[in-house]
Amino acid sequence: MGMDRKIEKKKWTTRNILLISIGSMFGLFALYSLIFSDNSSKLNVEKDKITVSTVAKGSFTEYISVTGVVQPLKTIYLDAIEGGYVSRKYIEGGNMVKRGDTILKLENNRLMMDFVNRETEMYRLINELQNTRLSLRQDRFNLRKTLADLDYKIDQAKDTYTRNQALYKDKVIAEQEFLKSKREYDQLVEQRKIEVESQKFQEVNSNMQIKQLEGTLTRTERNMRMMQENLSNLFVKAPVSGLLSSIDVEIGASINTGDNIGQIDDLAGFKMRVGIDEHYLNRIYLGLKGEFDFNGKTHELSISKIYPEVKDGRFEVDMIFAKGAPEGIKRGQSSPIRLELGKSAEAVLLAVGGFFTDTGGNWVFVVDGSGNRAVKRTITLGRKNPEYFEVLEGLQPGDKVITSSYENFGDNEVLVF
Image (tube, rainbow, N blue to C red):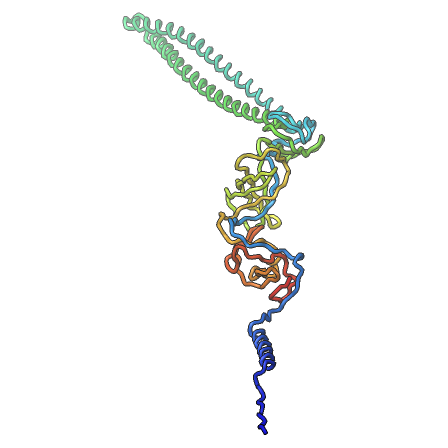
């Protein structure tokens, strides 16, 4: 009888190996999930409700967007040189005028009366000057006549004196008669000297009076010319040719000296009047460049004048066209202008968006390679213009960034599309 052999039970059966393998796989998966899984907070978002912008490398120019209004290159303000009331209006606002055209006529009775009085005074001075000159001529004639009479008498007295002197020496006449003839002769000679000196004094005095009258008359005539100019200023005329854009008076209105009554626009050229936030006042200077688009073309501008007065938080500048005003541009048109605040330089660029309000530019959501989610990433931004931020750190060209508002994303670190 044969012996029965004891059969040993196998520990590593196919079944056991399979169970152990499966169990190990689950254990390893659990351990991997525990160590490597993403525990970040997530939020599901709809991709069509966000804006995704691609980071690029390009030329960055720091500029601000401002609005300019087209104005004539030169505006001449019409101010009343003389006051008065409007008696006639020749040209209405909105019409073209030529230099010298009369626009208004003013009346000023006080000015007219002053002119008449001054004119009367001038004629009185003219008459007085003429009379003085005539008197001087008459005095000269009288002097000549007087001297002629005296010279005649002196010659007679001299003859008598000479004869009596000889007769006295011969003792023909008495000494008394001789001395009488001598005294008569000496008296006439002295009288002639006095007459000449008197006439010289009168002539000097008359000449001085004439010079004074002439000076007074010259001043009066000059004043008259000024008053005539003042009277002519009662006719308000166009100082230049152009468009009489406004005339703010009507017939019968009273105007004071210096009042502005209108303006003329010189249409030979245009400029842009631009309002700028006072924050940029220290960065604005003459010659600063800008550009704007008109009729499909970009046109360059430069600042030609700065008005430093700040009103309602803004100040103004004038900008002129670098190559002349574009054809077809009209007075009063407005246009956005890109005003450069710095030179262009190569930079990494990120489009401006609502994200900045929520993050302050310190971080953004970047779409990963799968395109199915976006992850929070710390960045550093530099300068800004109305279109782009300058990226200093954290982003590379080609990165896709959510640039719309993050208001509804809360504190989540991952967005799932």
